[in-house]
Length: 181
Image (cartoon, rainbow, N blue to C red; front, side, top):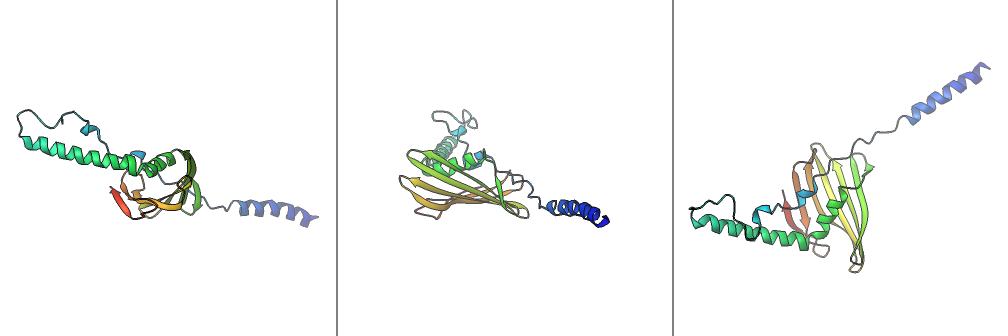
């Protein structure tokens, strides 16, 4: 009878120890802000004058401001038209809940339907020693379908406040097109 009670006591203890040995996944990495993929163009409003240019200064400042404004406008067009999908995909990832897929590696995945096509996005973030490595994969189903490919990757500080993005041109031309620091 003593053996029976001993076994009854040992079994729950062993079961508790074995089930309590699950590895804690930790916290997912901090996503950089969604604005990290855009440029602040507020200083280049059409028809506005720069607050830095004062009356009486030479026209050099006006020319420099106009040149900078034109270049910023070109980049804005590029971001709006050419890179709308990866930028929007990243902005949507911010509102999703990540899942741990490996030790120190997390994944945000979701689908979005727009203009007759479904985009499937998958963002991974792997915590390395002092930074997080990011990779965004996008696939498209429906009109103009293409298989999953790496649209952008990058690194960020562990707190998400600094880093770098490298955006590839497209599924057809999977070479780096733009670097954002």
